Amino acid sequence: MPSATLKNQGLTSRFAGVSTLHLFRMSTPEQTTTTESSLVPSAYPFTTPQLMSRYVTDTGKILPRKYTGLSAKHQRAITRTIKHSRNMLLAL
Image 1 (cartoon, helix red, strand yellow):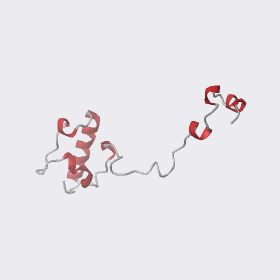
Image 2 (cartoon, helix red, strand yellow; image 1 turned 90 degrees about the vertical axis):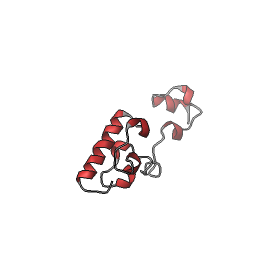
Image 3 (spheres, rainbow, N blue to C red; image 1 turned 180 degrees about the vertical axis):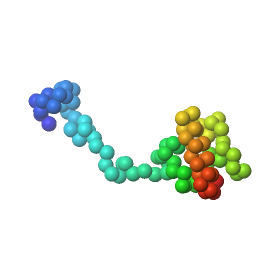
Image 4 (tube, rainbow, N blue to C red; image 1 turned 135 degrees about the vertical axis):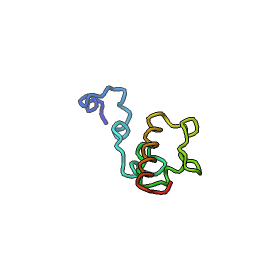
């Protein structure tokens, strides 16, 4: 791409050797697919207790932050989600 076109787009000449594909990378549908491991704990749906089983002991107690390694914000979200699923009588 000529440097004149880059300057017209507001880009400096240091990007002259780089193709615009690398400058303006868009996410593709393959990259934006959501998997269980890519969900943040605050986004876990309460209807899937299998995802939340790693935050609960065998006896049903919610694990504290020092064992889960979550931030305070995510720990509160997980606790809220677990209690919501318990109230809806889902298995946990």
